[in-house]
Image: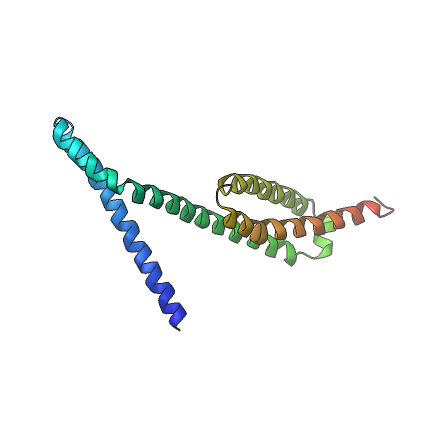
Length: 160
């Protein structure tokens, strides 16, 4: 229970900090707009903001990681739904249904496209890349192996 409360408190704090940083960003834009014709005042403001620049830069990195995590979760959820659909098919569906085969081909192509994008996006986040490998790439390869084995078995049948 304590762990749940800590996570909730941490999440609330992170949310509040993110809101604060966003307010400072908007304030910075507004102040720059207001002081654009007052170079001395603008220089003072920029000096103040220079102290805050490290926090903004750190927040941007965290924000990018949060966006990446959200996008990754969406891809993994879609991949899981596709894998569930594939698992629900009977061997007869795979052997006799051209529409199923075409959908699988499109699904695998979409998975590979998502994989290329996520690998590129996660290149600076090794933990996220490992999560992608485990949560998406591994199941994707397993599904493709099942499909390829079924296709090979189908081609090996004498009537084909």
